[in-house]
Structures are given as C-alpha cells and as structure tokens.
Image 1 (cartoon, helix red, strand yellow):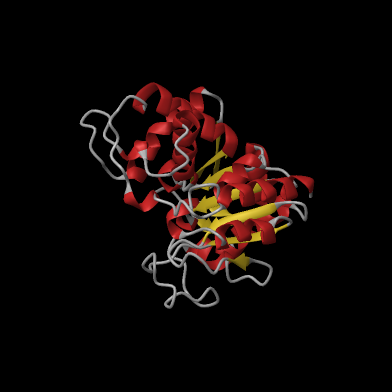
Image 2: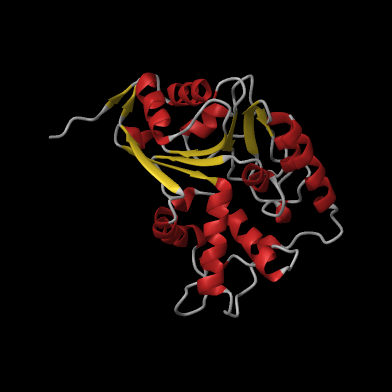
Length: 274
C-alpha cells in the first residue's frame, strides 16, 4: 500500500516557489487540505506557507462562503459564521490579521496583506447580484494578481464566474452581468451546472501557456495570472458561444442605479498607486 505523503511548511513553500508565486504577489486561493496527504500542523501550516511566500508586500485572498441564503443578512455574523468551502478557508478568516467582509452573507471574502482594506471595500459595496461585476475578482485581474488552486480543479475557481461577465460585457458592450455561458451545454444550448463545465478551460489555459501546474504532496496545484485567464475565457466566448441564443441567469442582474463603474475605476487607480 502506498504511504500517505508527509507534507511540511517548507515543502509547501518550495512548491509555491517552483510554480512561480513570489513575494509581493496578489493571489486568490482555493484549496483542499485533504488533497495534500498529511500536512504537519494542518490548515495553519498551509496558510503560514502562503503568507511567508508572499511577504509583507503581498496580499492573500480566500473565499469565506457560507451556507446562508443570499439575502440572510440577519443570520450572518462575520465574527462567528462558519465558512463552508474547506478547512483552510475556514481557518484563514479567523486569524487576527485577516479582514472578513460583512456582505454578502452567502459569499463573503477574507483578505490579509497590503491591499486588504481596499479590496474588502469592493466586496462590501457590491449588491449580491453584482458581485461578479467590477468587484474584488475584477480588481485582482486589473492589478496583475493570480489565482492559485491547491488540490482542487477549475470547478472551484470562482474567478471564472467573473471572467465570463467581463467577457460578455467586453465583447457585447452590455454593461450587465446576466449571462454565464460556460454553464450552457454547447450542444443542446441548455443551462447546466456552471462549475462542472469550468474544467473545459484546462486545455485552452494550458495551450495558451497561462496555467502552470505543479505538485505538493498528493495535491496538484495550478497557478494562473488572473488577467490572462480572463483573456482565455473571452476567447472561448468569441469562438464557441458568441452566436448562441444564451439563457439569462437571474443571479447576475445588478441594480442599474448602482454607481459602481466610477467607484471601481477610482479604487483601481488608488490601489495601483500604492
């Protein structure tokens, strides 16, 4: 019987360095602790390795999503409500130096590092329905940040939701976020499970040289620059989905009176200057 790998903090730091993560980077991390094998020190070891790799000038973002309804503002407490997207994320938001957003109740974010206060503002000021329109994940792309998948697939890559909205708006000029084309069955043109379809991006991401792959213990890891990933998603839309009669996904209908474009531009200018 094959032995379970024994993974240390230094193993994780070495693997992160090998795949290209550096001090000062901005990165969104999705993770699975069990994928590594046995990690000495558990979730805290993975978090420590990430923070030490990024250094004081870096910024680390993790999803802190909950099991609450999208509109359950009264049920959400950012200091007590558990995150349900894995033990690493649920451990991360509880740290003293991490800022967890108070909105939206179902999909809050947690951030630590140099750009944390400003990035959390982009989450706090977004309606739930507009979270994927000029929000925190767009900012990661516009600021040259990365997406890192530790032991999980692109089906866990929340940035792909945002990349679809950006692609649709850039190509069509729609200024809205109502179409999630990767969740459409390309043969039958019917809605499906969006994240399940996200793994179809592996091939174009690898072919474009956008996604780097490595391994730490038993965990396969993927690193991609967010803006380049957005560009690949737009290319897929142009070549495969643009001429389809796409169904509307009601979760992506922002309030048209919400003045987010000017606010977003000002925030990106501020963050770029830091």
